[in-house]
Image 1 (cartoon, helix red, strand yellow):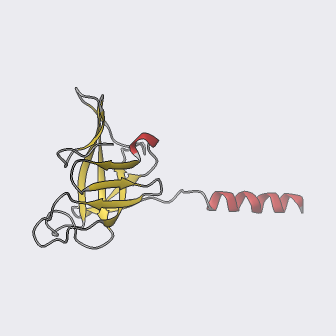
Image 2 (cartoon, rainbow, N blue to C red):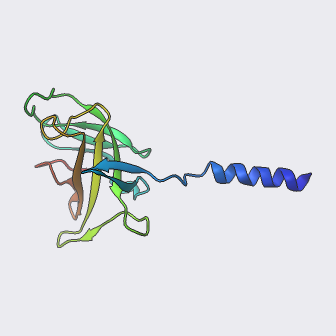
Image 3 (cartoon, rainbow, N blue to C red):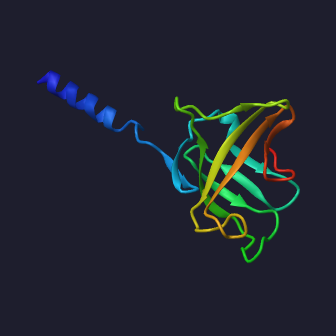
Length: 143
């Protein structure tokens, strides 16, 4: 009987582990992503304007452009995010002269909000430099 409960407990632990594959649909295919990243990449990125990017540990966040683009409302919107994974399940990264760069996908949870309200998913890069972590698509967003 003791073995039965131990086996059942082990099965419950295994089934509750995050073994599921996380993907974001981008450019016609499901791209494997991860939120299992260095803590330093999480948090709030902003510059001089009203725009910002906020990355939460659970893979959600908020995004707002610095200015209005086309017919898009200039307000923040919820996102789901993920760093693109390599074949070993690790976040893709590139060594650069200034430091490291990491490709990240943002998926709007409010429909098409990126690129003038024409796209739901946006590929960007976080750039780790000596003076901080920057968002590639922004002129001055930095953590």
